[in-house]
Each structure stands twice: as structure tokens, then as C-alpha cells.
Length: 614
View 1: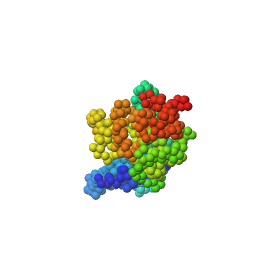
View 2: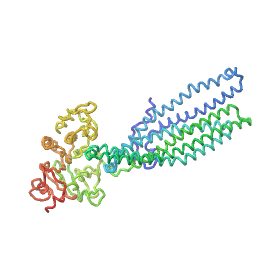
View 3: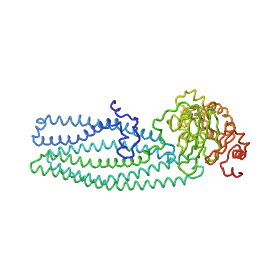
View 4: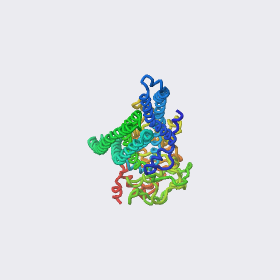
């Protein structure tokens, strides 16, 4: 079993994945070559077994023809013993070793090797990459491509190498019988390769089209299932059914196109496979008639002809699988090898623990559009200062936070923390300095404990429970039970936390932020899903966790910001007001109008209406 470790299944690849097929395959399989070489040699050895057996068969027949029936075994004991040992010992051992190299050495390691590399690369993509695609489609592409690379490698070794070894051995054996028979085999091989050369590129193209259609189905179905509550609430099951059927119909047509080509290919192969035994056996008989071959040679040539003829069927089927896999690899490459558009600078350093001074210096970002985002924003926040960010939807609040987290780079200006441009440090070290609770709470379908501990993976059980208590989450967590019977902190929360109410999800997220204990805390509508009673109950906990931290708090519910040290008002991507709650209300500007228009402390999103009084 030690040899099974020749391929390290999770070894990182060097550099980004190339966008061309052969370099991409090399990137996927780098580090696995020793194991693949072992599998290749064993497959080649297995491919020679039938040739050796045909040679033995010919010698046995010649021995039988040249001896008296009663004396055939007595006169040829070594031949029959060698033949028996070959059939009972050598052939099973070599064949078994070849199967082992595929089933134990290669496939269990290659698929996770490739999948881990693709997944690792995809995780490094910026947020915009995921915003532009289906989550299900991306996942499907990763699995499809890893499986296809594994299948291509396995089939090349198990089929192509096996077949080449068989054919080369056959040519050598037939050359010893009669060079003309070997020449006939070579001509037949050229015709076979010509047929392959015509069909395979078309198989490859139609396979890629079929794979793309299949991935689209996955994306649409996963998108529907992810949003199933919305589907139910709007009574749109029929609409979603039609959307899924449209993508399925496209896939059906692509599959028919592939099937029609497959039928033509297999039919042509059957005709070509029938020609080979006629030519080889007929040639051996003619050579025998001329006295240049023995009866055993005819039997050996016939055995090889029938074996190669049979082999062309499964070799061709395997070749279709290889080209199908190549088509799927190319389809996956187009999605997964996209270069990073947001990278760490060359020589980027680790950002150490910061005091929390934040500065936006003439920062502008509009997502590549003429308008939107923020424009020429200059804002300085002192360490430990608590700043509320207010504005109508689309005013630029979330963009401000996204630039701080370096989910995007400013199109102009810069963002600094403690005087350090965030573009000069690694993204991971930057984000470790920031804890964030968002309006759309992101939870995993893992245990409550794992979701809270995501804030600090090395936290102890006591620290996890303490964070949950501070977030007013411990009580409901202890009452959880999932469909597998797991309870309390062991209970799984469902995909995206669907088994919890909105308020419960946000309290889990708050507990996660408490546990992280980062010097900068971002609250993006962090209490928006909490009712007034629950919100009031955790205000003290929020106040405690904010002590000594730099806080950016985005909220429509202005009452949650009244205790901030300063409030910044954004309008159409620019800062139009800033000051304390009392000062801004007294000023009678946009913030005061927002405050006056609140219903139950909630800021409306119609900025035009708020400015109508101007």
C-alpha cells in the first residue's frame, strides 16, 4: 500500500491554471507523474499479454501437429509447463497489478488532486467572479472538469497505452511470421487512425456543447432550489418548471447531436473491424500455402486478428470517452481558468494587528460604469471611533465597505488602515483585521458551533459558548435539533441557515463577530432582522463588543445610530453631511429629513422623496 502514496492527492499546483488544453492538463497532473508512469508501464505490460499468449498458442499447435498424439506432452514438457505458468501465474499477476495501479494508485488520488487545485484557484477569485455566475454552475464545472481530467488520464493509460503495446507486439510477432502480414496490419491501422482523426474532433466539439448544456441545467436547478421560498411565495413553480425544461430541451438536443455522431462512428468501426481478420488470416493462409508459415502461425495470426478486431470496439469507445472528456475539460477551462482580477501586490506584506485608523482619500469606484458607487470620497476615522453610515439605497454605503475590505480596488484615490494602503498588504491579513456582520447573514450547513467558530477556528468550546451568550444566541441554540437528531451546538443549521429565523441567523453571525475580536468592526444592517425587543436585549452586548474598536455601522434604522460618535450621510456616492446625531438633526439637512420621515425608526429608500423639500 506504500506505493499508493506515489501521488499526493492534495498537493498544490505551481502558478495559475493555463488557458490552453495541454498546459492545463499538465498543470492539473503535475506532481502525479511518478504514479502515472508506474500505471503506464503496468498497462503496457498487460497489453503484451495477449501477444505472448498468441505466440504460445502457435507454438503449442505446431508442437501438437509435429508430434504423435500420444507423445505430444512427453516430447514438449517445458513448453506446456511454461504455457501453464504464463496463464496461471504471470498473466493474472501482471493484469492484477495493472488493475491495482488504476483502482488504488491512480484514480483515488488524481480526482481529489485536480479537484482540490481547481477549488483552491476558484476560492481565490474576487467576489465579482461569483456575482457573474450561478453558484451551482461553478460547482458543477469544478466537479465535471476534475472528473474529466481523471477519466482522460485513466483511459489514455488503460486503453491507449494498452492498445499500442498490443499492436506493437502484434507487428513484431507478425513480422517474424511474414512481413507482408505485418504490412497489411499497418495499412489497416492507418485507415483506423484516419477514421479516428475525422470523427474525434467532432465528438470533442459536440461533447463540449453537451457539457455546457448540462452545467446550465445544474445552475438553473440549484438557483431555483436556493430560492425555493421565493418561488413558493410568488406561486412561480410553473414558471421555474418552464425555465428548467427549456434548459433540459437544449441539453436533449445536444445529446441527440452527440448520439447521432456516435452511431455513425461505431457503425464505420464495425465495418473496418470486420476487414482485419479477413486480411490477416487470409494472408497467413497464403503464406502457409507458399511454405513460409506453419499451422501454428495461422492460429497465432488468427488469434491476434480476432483480438485486435475486438479491441477496436472498446478502444474506439474509450477514445470517444477520451475526446468527450477533453471536450468537458475545455468547457470547464473556459469558466475556471479565468485570471484573477484582484490580486495581492508583488511582495505584499502581512498586515499586523492594527490600531484601527481608517482613511478614504479621494476614493472613487463605480463598478466600471459611468455612475454608481462612490465618487471622490475623503473620510478619516480615528482608532476606536464609531461612525454610522447613512444614505438611501444606492448611495454608496456598501461600496465604501467593499473598498475597505478590498473586495474591489478604487478606480481613483486609495484606502488606508493605520496609514498603510490596503493594496500593499495581503488580502487575507487585511480581512483578518475586520469582523463583519451583514444584512444577508451567511451561514453554512454545518453545526451551530462550527458556524460561530468560523470567526476564530482555534477558539475553545467555552469561548464559543461565551460569544453565543453575549449575542443572546445561547438560549435558542440549546433548543435546536436537526433531522439527524443532533442537538444544541451540534445541530446543523441547513443550507444558508434556512432552519433559523432571520433574527436567529443574525445572532449567530453576531456571535461569530464577537468571537473574532478584530480591531475593526463593520455592522451592515446587523440588527435589521431583529424585532425591537430582541434588538434592545443585545444593544448592551453590542456596546461591549464595540469598546476599543473602530466601528463602521450601516443602518436604515436611524435609532440604532444615535449613539455613534459621528454619522456620515452619503447621497449619490458623495458625502453630503457628517456630525453627531444631535448636530445633524439640528442642522435641518438631508439627515434631519430622513429622521423626520422615519416610521418606527426606519429610513425610507426613496432619496428623491427625501430631497423633495429642498
